[in-house]
Image (tube, rainbow, N blue to C red; front, side, top):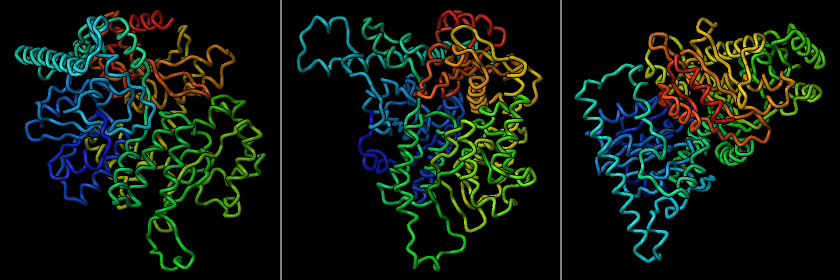
Amino acid sequence: MFVSDFRKEFYEVVQSQRVLLFVASDVDALCACKILQALFQCDHVQYTLIPVSGWQELETAFLEHKEQFRYFILINCGANVDLLDILQPDEDTVFFVCDTHRPVNVVNVYNDTQIKLLIKQDDDLEVPAYEDIFRDEEDSGSDSDGSEPSEKRARLEEEVVERTMRRRQRREWEARSGSGSEPLAAALEKSSRLFPSPMSDRTAPRSPTRDILFDYEQYEYHGTSSAMVMFELAWMLSKDLNDMLWWAIVGLTDQWVQDKISQMKYVTDVGVLQRHVSRHNHRNEDEENTLSVDCTRISFEYDLRLALYQHWSLHDSLCNTSYTASRFKLWSVHGQKRLQEFLADMGLPLKQVKQKFQAMDISLKENLREMIEESANKFGMKDMRVQTFSIHFGFKHKFLASDVVFATMSLMESPEKDGSGTDHFIQALDSLSRSNLDKLYYGLELAKKQLRATQQTIASCLCTNLVISQGPFLYCSLMEGTPDVMLFSRPVSLSLLSKHLLKSFVCSTKNRRCKLLPLVMAAPLSMEHGTVTVVGIPPETDSSDRKNFFGRAFEKAAESTSSRMLHNHFDLSVIELKAEDRSKFLDALVSLLS
């Protein structure tokens, strides 16, 4: 059920308990986690933190710890599936779920005892009414009376218990047959059982109910940032600090950088945070001289849409930012010429543009934003500046929110073999603290490599015509042996590459129909197990609401062809697939979407 009073129904409940935090591996979840950690530190709340990158890790971690805890907090995971069905908890276990994934599973919404959803009610949730979903054949013939809702709820609870028992028996059978510690290949073999389609494991409802659920669950999208939700909790408790506000800003910026929310939603949420920034960072003129040298200051900026430009050279940033690279078409000789013309139009010497931004002449830097915006308008780039925030640590260190997002993301998705996923998670979490600026700067260097690799891969895909039209969608596959291919085996990196590739393809193609198509992209995941990661990206249009229909489409295509697929990632539009099943899976996807 939805929690209406976060203070009473959530925070005061866990305040006196020992709780377990499951945190997904994305920047917004990390920021929400940092805010919650700060609150727990204020009130001496005991907690254990476990990072989880997918459903298998979540299920395994829960089985290991379920005897020690009664209260579990899930950040950016768990809202869009039937949690009780997947985790099989005891009856007194309570889950608090703060998740941006939409749509919220209807069983989670209407479970009053064990699932507590920390989700903003003003988001456009459109949850179907209880009576519309859990009605039976006889309901239509009977006159409604006062006891009917309670009878339906009782039937729902019976259904949930029945499904729970079936799943528990299946797990016991699997344990007896020795499949407890199976490799990924074996997990793929039974993936259809791990994640049945929303209706397959439920008592077959009437056709209208099926239609209502299909309409509700067919599109995947994202709601308000979890970090913003946690910051609002801190504000309600009067414990909000500047650091917490900055983490909320970074969480929102992560959603914008990854194209998870529409521009309208981003601008609205920026407005909300801007009011908090004014409140926390207001300075009277007579206070100026009393400021500490190393104080933290957050300010609203109308800054350039260039990745890491303040920590890079302007030339490198222009070449490796998706927005500018796609509009200049920098993978072509003509595109490189257009970039030179753009720099000439601004009157910036190449010597200045190619050295570090910090070393540029102060006279050029003073009016740089206006100069770039003016020239960008002439070259058809109307959105060169964007509303954002920056943070100053003293006088030396200044970061834009997007800088921190790229750095933290790169630390978490690092392809280096010298640490586990948990080590990378902790390093990324630490980089968000101002006491660990060395880790943040290291993350910025990794982010530069990632951005370069992304643009080089996009150039390679477009120049060798790897993006092909399959009819209802575009398809691109990265081959084993492609430079930097291991960088893109991770879901977040591959999703970001796919989105940037689609933007660049739309700018380069003259085929009007292709401009309106979504993209499916595949990259090698494991040579040993013969698996690939497949990502589905919605069409790139100005009016796009960022809703993604590929999660359900992948599920149906795999089901109809018996393809060995694993829905292990929290985003349903990211799957793991056996490489040998790829062709029949794509054929089924084409016929399904045609």
